[in-house]
Image (cartoon, rainbow, N blue to C red; front, side, top):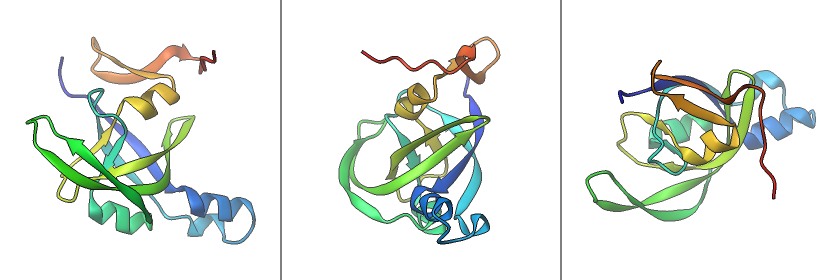
Length: 137
């Protein structure tokens, strides 16, 4: 299977809450539309330090990340960031890999937005078509 990319918009979730509460204007929400590599082997959203700073995301803690080459590194974990893809939204804590050249969209946000990779079209698509299905047990 080839590499799949998707255009997503990332928003500072604290800013979104402030805008909803009328504290700031919608236009003041820090956000960026980026081209992300869809990586089902990554757990969550991976961004670099520059993007974290532009989005104004604070640091919630640290976690050890294991890379494809088996190297391990302690990485920052951000405050919540909203991920928007078409009409779907989720919020996650992002892992910051300082010199990463690509944003990675991992399995947890994909699952939460009911998305999957269509290997025939090399595209991101709804796992259940246009209907978002939430499995609750």
